[in-house]
Length: 174
Length: 131
Image (cartoon, rainbow over all chains, first blue to last red; front, side, top):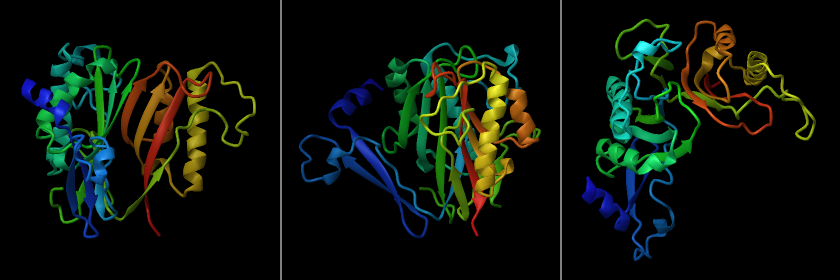
């Protein structure tokens, strides 16, 4: 994990997806190394945009925290059980999201947008390191927004993620 | 199926859904963040938000209702709500408007909203049939 994080500092890669008229989504990656002058995308930071054309189904996911995907509303104390560390919470968030993707036959490659709501933005690096394990170590990275908020839906929650996934009409993976 | 509510564990349909899938032929309606401030007010006009978050919630929902009406949509077409609030409350009022329908939600406690005095703001996405 440490190797990957260090390497990213020197060799970050950006990703962008373009959906074709047939509804398929193609993945583009562009290097961000300073010497990649000929690549017009060099000015676009990692994961700055993902394009999905018309002709794709969209899957909107509810915001997931480390709380179990299905829980009572309003929340009840005995259900609010989650790891205290941000790495553990991130794993549980990602597993919650994956349960929904799996149900729809989708993978992380279908995810075009992710919003991260954090109680502390200084935990971003740790969160992204865990997310990268799911997103295939930077093979794919959706357009992403990170926002610091005062509190989430339960007291111990430090991270909530909601995502939008795009699905080509023929059901193919992105 | 234009709108498919994801239910990964075959639980009661009254549970909040973890996901909603919208088919490619549906149009999407994105609303700005809407508070209790009346939509017809000029941007510079004075407006004092009521103290009570329940009252604010009802005014906000009426505003959203007006936008949905204008777009030919209903609460049943709403697929995603991102809820921003500075203090908890208003949940019962929302259920009144949703009438048993449960869109996907993300609920966030924030320190401030763009308008002074605003305690709750919803960001709504709806899926509507084209044509």
